[in-house]
Image (cartoon, rainbow, N blue to C red; front, top):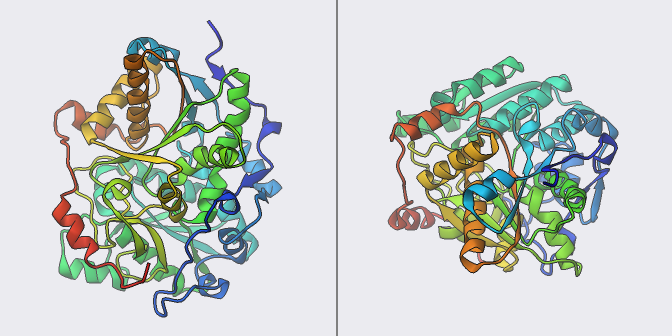
Length: 453
């Protein structure tokens, strides 16, 4: 039997991030000022981000050099391993060849430190004292808390209330790294107080938590805002995932026919997919690329491709993305992350160009896939990653039905060791499926800002 684990030495950590934007057949839609509805400039973003990250946000360079201090931290877990899931293949009795890139080996247990580290580095270089952010399931908050500690920055995290209650170990991890964590909506900001006045028992949402974090950052010259997904520079940083896969798949003597990633805001999906999509646009192999999202938060499959605010209180610039409407609040019964009302503009744009596919998976199907994977491969996936696992299993069973062998590569973006309550609830039958109602989608979309397409 061939080796099932493919490792690269430290010196093969990529030296540059890959920027897909200049390779797209149509340019990305401009970001608009929330007040004037005109395209924004760097000065408009400077209260929130250091200039180095703003430059990356609008970069047209195909490659962006990774600073050596960032690569030094990456060496703690990168390059991340690639596995061939032979036991899962046998359990499914499929001719498919299934590979997964395992990002759960990072200190925070997910792919998120891959952008948290450079964001903390650039803010430290700019003289920033504190970073402020939001987090849903806690993967991003714990990663930024860790990176902030590495570079001597304070860290403030607004954690979506339902996750704050459901995932105390994620909160404890952030606090262990030295972060201050508040349940959102909170009484600490005008945005939070307004939500609490209207809905004292609000479960919160990423849109609400973003409003709180942005409000704090915009009001303090020593604080900047950091985001774990959606924005171009965040997706850029994650491309080391796919770049490492190039070499590891070559070691395996294989080439992916199908790529699968879970999608909430788009960062881990972009990390594995963008290098492959860019290579395809340049005339290389063209794998099918599948984005898998939860049926409870179906921005790609039910949302509208339109300009919308990134937060609930409308403090952020307007971006064109697939959105369910900024007032969307995910149901509290949804056990995973992937709770954002919108999708990364770059991922949305690429879907609109027809370069990728999107599908939604029900919660019970995602957990069933995660349990099946754990029993075969010995790794318990994060609830978010279960959506990618479900997508990969569906593709493998499709190969079985068609009697063909395809190589399937998916991103296992994190482990579920801090999310076992979700698995306990699943085993006890306390979770249920939820389709985001079409009438609620329509109501939320009715409030989209009046921006001409």
